[in-house]
Length: 185
Image 1 (cartoon, helix red, strand yellow):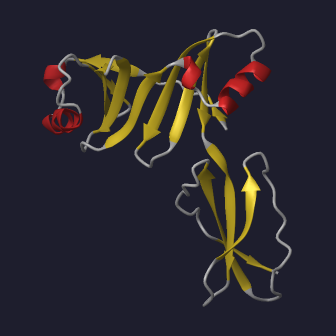
Image 2 (tube, rainbow, N blue to C red):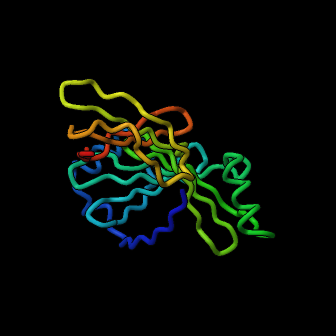
């Protein structure tokens, strides 16, 4: 899955960073002293070096860690990312790369290819679940992330069938369930 994002950040004097935000940061990175702060859509971003790698964290106004982004060597990008770049940016040189981990544990990779910033997640696919009232859900099918349709064929006439979907990454970690939909044949 690819996504392009534009983020507007405003530099902030570290003296005006709320105590909860600073406390959270200091609990995560007590050894870091040189930090550049900015405000980003109601949250705070701290940029710093951690073990010689450019790193940033985003902390919300309540002091919750939302995201950690760390510079990685271009050679550390997953093979699927480098193959996508080779096929979609012929002759493009990847000059920077980063690994992003959000609060849900989702890993996203960022690559700077020429003048383009390209984002990649490690999603592998979807799982479709079905159940009827009083019956435990069963997984119907694993769906490859490149597929965007699936036809339900085993519905019971005049009975409500409940369907939900989850996403899973290459490590097998499954997301929370989507909203449940009700289908009647």
